[in-house]
Length: 305
Image (cartoon, rainbow, N blue to C red; front, side):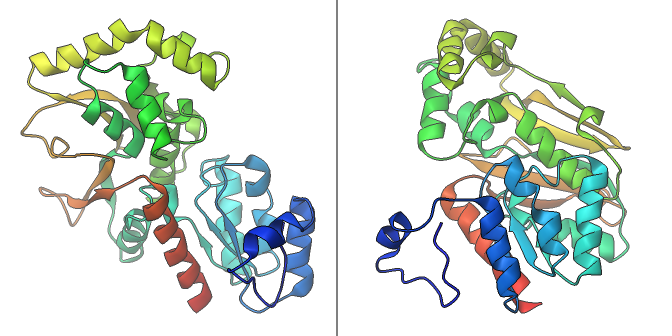
């Protein structure tokens, strides 16, 4: 870890980092707290539970937290609520726009709707850039495992691709949106209609790819059934009347979710104001570049408060 309250020289940061102390999360957070610098912002770009666990300590010291790590906001509801309350009590920002849709203004828009007195009745969304990329590119000519590996190599997946393909990552995202919409929900409240054979979830990542290859016929059948109906396969998240679910669906040309390409995400908000035609947010929902831009935007927001 490289610590310098005067700033870090970007010309030789790699060498300085190599010459610095080994990473210790407690030491890192202690440095921030002890320096007590005005307008400090802690930025979490990991997918690590230990890192997420230190947010409360920082917020209590009026240190803002910006996180693309979804673990805190999809943890136990009481912990999520506690972090929000701490941010308000100690006048610190707790921002996590990139938890859902990378840099797309999904959470911010939802917050604006709620603050201005609207009520969210239905959310329908494709929230996995990984799964959208996979099903947009898979047609049975190249194996499903190869398409997933391409998505991982492009940087669209979580460090463990099973989080994406199992639907767990999408569950976290719809849970966060449900909570921001005012629903007190837990992960166990979300129904997951998983399309992966159970054996794909056993062992490590290498075992996962071996199992994907073994079950190629399963994935080919999923594709062929949808193609026969002139439909696309989309992994859809839905919140309606306080009930949330995620799962693979056949989407036809008349549906709003049909024209969604590459790694794009889309969210449809049906509210008291947007009844017949939903408020739609659509765009690239995965990738290091767009995620980084969303994180940077949150840092700027925190610094301006």
